[in-house]
Length: 198
Image (cartoon, rainbow, N blue to C red; front, side, top):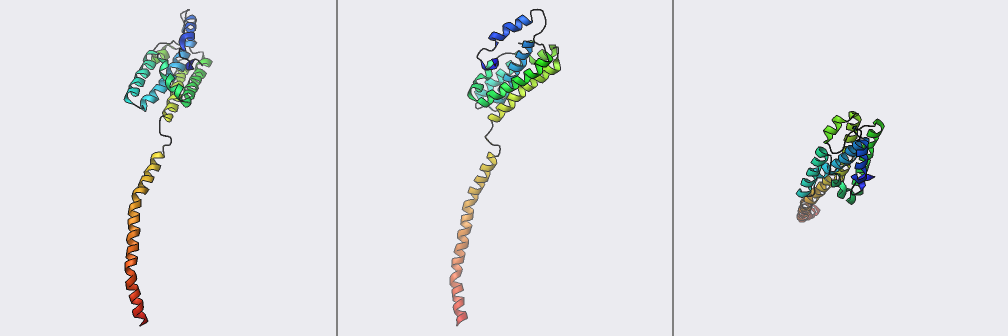
């Protein structure tokens, strides 16, 4: 639930510090890195892949770099989550899936570290890596699909419609030419019938 708030680490960071006071890493730190940073990175990566403007793409690439290499700036995805319920659901599902890998393994790591280093120092690196990957991929795919056209076939359908419209005038010209040729042949056929009768 903390991912939906404006300042998610206000309550979490003191708990991480309490957990790490003995010198060991923290389960909450692993949750912070995977469920917050990687989920936000997934949203930002999708927006950077299909931006609506050059400024948006640049801002999301910067946020993505901070998420991955500094373990921070998880607030970057909040505007997209607030505007689109599907993006919000994808981010929450990715965070939940990441937690499902971290908690059973009791993986311990730290916040504010680059994700590769946080994985290397973790006492359960494989579950933690799976948590980071799933927390990233679910919101990435969900956000990317939301930023694509409504249907992939839309371009094909519009292309067929354009082809039909382009072929319409030529078909009308062909039908007109056929009708005119039929009309032009009528007098000759009528004269032939008269000659046959005589």
